[in-house]
Amino acid sequence: MPGSPSTGSASTASNDAIPRSTRAPRRRSVLTALAATAAFTAAACSGDAATGTATNSLTIYDGATGQFSSNFNPFLETSNGAARGIIYETLLFFNRAAADDVRPVLAEDHSWSEDGTTVTFTLREGVRWSDGEPFTSDDVVHTFEAMAEHPGLNKAALPIVSATAHSDTEVSITLDRPSYSDLWFIAGQTYIVPEHLWADLEDPVTHLNSDPVGTGAFALDSFSAQSIGLAANTDYWDPEKPHLDTVRFVSHSGNQTALSALQAGQVDWSGIFIPDVENTFVNRAEGNVSLAVPQFITVLMPNLEEGPTRDRAVREAIYHGIEREQINDLAFEGYHELPSPAQIILPRDEVWLAEEFRDEFAGHDPDRARRILEDAGYEEGGDGVFVSPDGDRLSLAVKVVTGYTDQINAIQVMTEQLAEVGIELRTQEVSRAAFVSDRDNGRFELAIDSLYGGPDPFGLYDDFLNSAAAAPIGEPASKNYARFRDDEVDEALTRIAGTDDGEQHREAYATIQRRVAEELPYIPVLQTHGVAQFAGGRVTGWPTEDDPYALPMPYSYPDIGIVTATLRPAG
Image 1 (tube, one colour):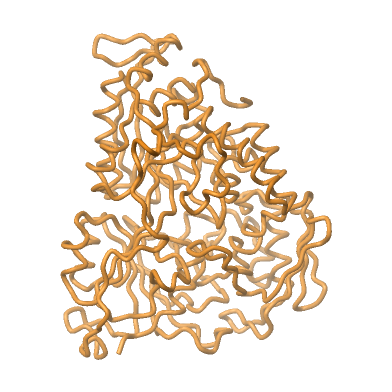
Image 2 (image 1 turned 180 degrees about the vertical axis):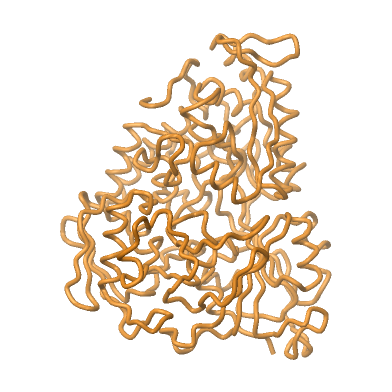
């Protein structure tokens, strides 16, 4: 495999996977309501006496720990989440909570050229930036030209050739290959910025954009290291929205303090892991709701360019050495599911799963883990930890965000499991901002994180596996944080993007899944749910199981903008 040396013997990770008939994973519907109450109290209509919060406001905890930085550059994943979807908007909205749900945002329509290399958008008329300037096709042209000029802005590594304005409301984006499957990235994950403010920036990649001007339903109103305040955009293009006057983001030290704030009515919307959620949160107050959606693959993310995890034998030993049912039970209260070795979201994407993986889930075989290391030349040291042929102890630091208690607990469980196969794990807790920076720039040995994508497998695979989305250590990667490079995978991704033929897609997906199972560029731990909590019933209009109009998690972008624009005061 180019760019990823391997000294271990090859093996297909799916060989020891668990047959579905042996261990059926827990399944939930796309949006599962853990519990909900239907009635809201009349008192909710007059405000929250305990907190003094008006009912036409919303307080969000999106997982931020430590102090906020004044970064609202929507191209950067280190930016505040309010930038992506609330302040800045995309051309289209792709709803990952419901199949085949694509809606207009800044663009009302789109069409492809016959060869699939050019997509033309008809833009919405009457849209204005929050400073009053009109939104036109020049803004779209500038956004894509900036991405073409500055790879650090082009997070999906789109092969942009040109952007052309045909009129104020018609614009075309041309790419250097057929790109049907890239529409999610082009129109659903690219946040349009104002040409009149961004054209003269010397370096938009490092621009913090502390005074953001967007087209979204809310605009920045106040900023401090502890909170971010947004005010309704009274000139928003949808005259029926927003219904709330203000939105506020707050930071907490971790899940426990966030839960306390949620229970006290100081936070309306969060997305944290809550042990015994029904008794701890749902049943504590009328109007409390918890939702979950299968959306992620929690992984141990290896560094494929530096350190011990460059060796596939180490990755394989970790894969076979962890016992996922125990991790699920002890760290996540049995809430999640065994992952597919194909690293695909199930059951949503089952139609794209290669036949050879249909009855298989990641398994546990500690004896095999030890054999893999021994066959690769590792020897067990006196302390029970294997030593590499170069004399280095197999001791790995796992980076995790401080306060993410479920992930921290998962690492602790895996530490005990892997000690039995001669691998030492060390938990390395850092702030969320430091985690994102270190992950993006490849400053880790292992990191616990999640893979995710768009409305089909292409988004996840293209984001995290495409060589073009990797970067040298010390430079930010475009989601391919492991720095995986594989010619077969790249070619398969190109085939998928170049056609709308479903059968060709299936064949190419099978190629990708085989390579993923063989090379383990990411080590799957569990298929996990995105979780969201809505507190107290002061605000209504949330996504539900019956109306999954967007993902309900406050860390999902641009869904967060769709949700905040839809919410309204109860009563």
